[in-house]
Every structure is written in structure tokens, then in C-alpha cells.
Length: 272
Length: 320
Image 1 (tube, each protein chain N blue to C red):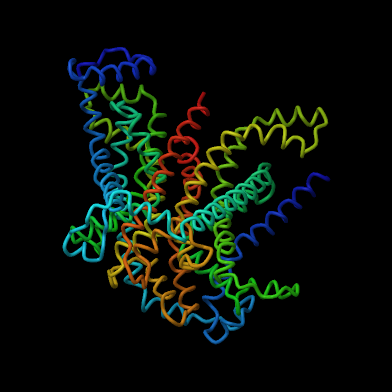
Image 2 (image 1 turned 180 degrees about the vertical axis):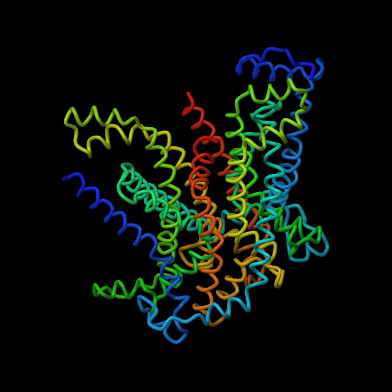
């Protein structure tokens, strides 16, 4: 009996902690629904909720949202294309020099994006591909490729060898084994990698602000929000409304793929 | 397809054999598998060479050549050797920035880890709704940082920010969160908030590996909850702690976006990473300082490289 009470008491504390932790998120939604004239009052909830800010967002930000979607999906495709075969070579085909490769991947994850941005900026300006979507996709993919390879490698190393040998006995080539056995079995790992590649590309501020600063309407949504900050008179309503809209894809991904998220963090960080 | 009936050697021998083959590769003919492996690894190797190594080399090269705005037109950047390094390290903002970076990283890590661990222990035993509540803690980590940063910026507004109205309820004077003096504290608070989910997830999964029998035995011996934590949980978590702090260190060191969006790296909130960003890409920079930015970038790069080695060593120890 006592234990039962105690358990509900824990739920109450947990709920209180969540409220504190998610207060900024609530506040963002609250401001986005507050009429322009009331924003400076700082009411705890919108007394007369309005969708006016969302109207402005739909007018101004749709191109940026579309750009982010393209960049996100492009980054996912590029990341999977590079990471999956690489991990197959590292984990199952025992490519020579894989210790060095593994080390490079660890270091790759630790390189500050600002350092990469500096290098990319000079190269891109020389090649004339600043402010282009392919340029941004390539840069964003550097956030996810090392993580992707490490996650795929950890996952593929656990595939039973008998499965691969059986396919080889049937006369399948390495390519065939990869395509018809390894990849289908690694579906969960692929979902996790794709999820993170998309989230990171969608959220990227640094590469977008350095490599795509003059890209006009073809700039991602993070730059759309940043434009509001840069303006003289900060428009908090539309800014928070854009922030809410920009969070929608991540919220959907969180709900749909929640178990992959936790798996991704732990696999990427602890096991590799 | 000729090796159909070859018995698979045990993994350890196979590894040795593969290393052997790579060492004597030039004399002995490589087996078909090795060629296939190289083929599959080739895109990755090419990718790392072109999209990692090349920009990094470019960055280091920029730090030893004097880049000006004209360089992008004429392509001329005279070689300067270590001159720019001397200038940057000798400049007035260098040591204060290093100190601020250290404060930002250390304070962030201590609180992120402490709060993350407390939450992980709290959620260790399941109770009604515990799974959902724990999942909700991930939200801040998945939001685009620009979203969190603008929200914090607004909450910390001196006049109409909710933080000051909250403090006002207790009769505390409004705090100028984002001015030069307080900005380091403010961005650190926001960064701690951002890092809690990561710490929670990793430490929680670490806790799952602590055998429950240990706790049962300890409570039979009459050990208190507190005693159990210090004698069982904390020691057994040590490897996970090491990796968490190590990764946290690297991630915090490279933070630019949250600081830049909240304060543009002004005042005490300037760290090495935002300094490099400001010198190269900051708005309204009168003189473009790519080379100086590249120097700071190279310093960050060296730290990342060292941490890479430490990570590897830590992982080896964990595996043993």
C-alpha cells in the first residue's frame, strides 16, 4: 500500500520536472499565439489567442521550409550512400586499414563545425558554389557521415555470419550480399541514421549562415528565423510562430521514431 | 565464390590474417574479399579526403597565409608562417576568451552531468507514466538550436522577459541577462538546458547495465539508498561517465549557434569557437580576419584531435 502511494508521488515529481524542463517550449507556443499588442505583457497564457503570426509565417517562410526539406532529404540520401557501404567494408569485409579509418571517424565527429565552415568557405568561393543547395547538402552531410558509419558498423558487426555465408554459398557476390542481405537486415540502423542526418541538417545554423548567407529565398528555415533576429525591431510573434513551425518536423519524428532516437544516442556515443 | 567450402577462421585469427595480408599486400596477391572491401570503402575514403581533409588543410593553410578581402579576387595571400599565431595569442582578447571558454565548458559539463545523472537515477525504477515523462525530456535536444536560442533570448529579455517577471514575484530586481557582464552566465544556463537530454539518455542506458542483484544484496545488508548510490551506482557508471564527459567536452567546446544567436558572442559570452566565427563571418566586421579566425580554428582542431586520442584510449580501457 505504502509502495503504491510512493509510486504516484514519484509520478507527481516527474511531472513537475517535465513542466520545468519544457517551460521554454511552452513559452514559445504561448508567445506565438499572443496578439502583437500583448506580447510585452508576458501573460502566462494567451488571453485572446490569435493566429496572425502564423499567417505571416505562411506568407514569408514557405520557400525556406521547402529549402530545408530539400536540404534535409539530400543530406539523408548522401549520408546513407556513403555510410552504409563504408560500414559494410569496415564491419564485415574487414577492409585493410580499418583501425585508421575508425580513428578518423572518431576525430571527424569531434571537429568543430566552425573550422569546417572556414575551410568550406574558401573552397566554395573559389569554385563558385557558395549559396547553392548542393554545396550546403555536402557541408551538412559532414555532420552525419561519421556518426552514420559508426552506427552502421556497430549494427552490422552483429549480423550472424551464417546468414552471409549462406548467401555466398548460393553464389551471391559481395554486392549482392550487401544489397539483398545486409541492407534489409540493417533497416533499423538505416532509419536511425536517416533520422539524425535529417534532424541535424534541418537544424543546422552554422553552415547555412556561412555557406548560404546570400541565398535569398533558397535559404533554409533556420536562416528564416535568423532574419527576424537581425531586423532592427525584433518581431517576437512571427519569430516564435516560425520557431513552432520549424519544430513540427522534429516533433513528428520524435513521436514516430522515438525508440530509434534513444537507440541512436546510446549506440553512437557509448558503443560505436 | 571459390571460397565456398573454406572454413571461416575464428574472428581473432581472421583479423590477424587480414592485417597480415595488408602488410604483405605488395608481395602476396590480395584475396578477392580484400578487393571487394576496398571497393566498398572507397566512397567513404574519397569522401573523407575531399570533404574533411581538404577543408581542414585549407583551414590550416589559411592560418599561415595572410588572407585579406582582396585574396578572394586576386588569389594572393603571402606566406606568414607563425606570425599570425603570435598575433592572435598575443592579442588582448585571447586569454580572456580562453578563460571564458573554460568556464562555459566546465560549468556546462558539471551541471549537465549532475542533473542528467539525478534524472537518470530518478527514472531508473519504473513508475506510472515514467516512460512517457522520460521521453519528454528529449524534446529540448531535438528542437533546432535556433528555436531554443531565440526562445531563451526572449525569456531573458530584461524588460518583458518571463524570467525577470518570475524573479519579480520574489522581489528580486530584474537581471540584465544578455548584457556584456552577464552574457556568459546566460548562455551557459541555456546550454545546460540543451545538454541535459543527452546526459540523461546515456546515463540512463548506463544504469540499465547495473545488475539489480547488487542493490538487493546491499539493501539486505541494510545499506541506505544514498550509500547504495555511492558504493554501487556511481563506481559502476565510471566508464559511461568518462565517455559522457569526454563527448560533452568536445560538443561544448564547439558550440557556436546558441551563443551567437543569443548574444552574437558579445561581452563575456565570447568563446574560442564564436570568436573564430565572428572574425570570419560576423556581421559588420570592418576588417575581414580569415587568417586570424583560421588560427583559432586550428587551435580548436588540435584540441579535438587530442580528445580523439583520449576517447580511443578510454574506449580501449572500457573494452578490456
